[in-house]
Length: 317
Image 1: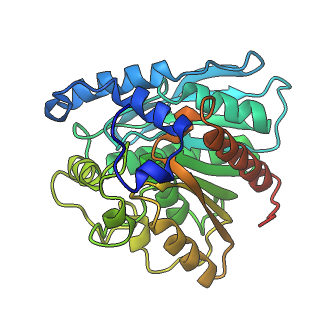
Image 2 (image 1 turned 180 degrees about the horizontal axis):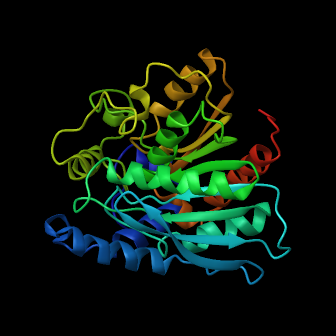
């Protein structure tokens, strides 16, 4: 058995280590020297290996909408009943340089099946070919399309980089006529100060390190991150008034986890509703482990309950 570094030897359970080991096995020894195309190939293979398939009752429709940089591909998931009371706009993770409609396909399909809500996934442009604000602009265009056509409450959501984009779009549209009914963020990138907090205490966490975060930020920005821009760094905003109910779910062993409570506190101080849950012993990317790790399965169930409440405009926290 590999040596497990402290403190993760005690924080992380056997099931989660098995998930980590299986994930790491996809990365070759020269992974750090791969270009973005090589990294995408590895990531896509990793996601495919953990893909659980779509529930048979879920219907899927692929289509495109006009975007600021050309057509944006969307994938809509509909519950078997064909009836729904809310929509979820889902923005995938992958450090702004990886992922797409296929990487998170079964995740979106299961969210649709378990909530009974329509889910729309967004194939936004990726860095470094398309730098900020390309990802934000595509996410904004997708939200405006769904909000303008759904006729139902729209919940913004996403994991990791997608959580960053969801938070940025929520803030930018919080006072619009067609504004989000809520947001549910999954281990999102919210802040930019990597010199403190969990960016330091979990700098070398399994699955995501602080060095990885800085690399992704540089690829997205082109070298200099605009840390005073809320569309890039959601915590850079000065005014959080008008924000909709917010739920954030993070993993304990993740350098991104520490900014979530700060973000929630700022929303509450501005008069909003926000709840933050840190899942013990879980690592970045654990959504892929929801069928193999008990803790991840329980966290996914918490997410489903959160989506359900936001779609019904309830606040149980």
